[in-house]
Figure (cartoon, rainbow, N blue to C red):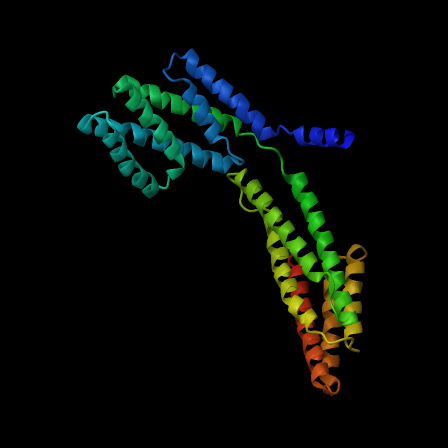
Length: 327
């Protein structure tokens, strides 16, 4: 019984985030301003503010411009349609038949909700006057400007990005250790699951990096995006290693030195400078390539397939190191 109560308490917990606070404050503030100005249908300003609060500054500006343009478009088209056809349902249908393609052509279809609100206001009041036009446009401006002002401040994502980089590096280390284990033992275990986990982490990091870029309008892609580009290319290489590891047919004498090279590189990450470490690993790989060429040919089909897979794994590891040098 007690466990059930505790479970319900956990279910009732909720978190009020920064964006939620901005939305609540913005809605209240815009409605208050519109009411103080004596505007008709002043609550519409709050609705527009809610629609314009977005996760990033760039998306907020794009959304605000879409709402503003669609509001202006709705007022002009509704005035024309209702004047010619009258305030009836066919006129409403004709309005949407005209506005939706126009908004899509102008790439502002995100603001169609505002167009719907505006046309229903006009339809409800059965009047289109310049005073009504300015009333609606001021409501839209209040909602849009309030949202933009609140969205000028966004939380700093640097700590989250640093933490994500650390987690990705740790996941890569674990994945590479599994590669070394697979090469040494001649079989892979848990490699696919680790790849899936790493892929999900990279996708999360990509979304985080995109948000950071969209929060800095006059700054290009930073070091975090470069880091993700490199790690993504390395991930593709690790994906290509997966079928190679599955094709190994037991232990091979050539597998041990390759696995040892991998493990030494991982252990040396914190004990040597990056250029020295990469250069040393490339030199070791060159020696292993030479050994492969000088050794006797495989005696069986199984040995040939294993040797071929090991050779391809060495090539993928060489490519991985080249990408590592770009960091």
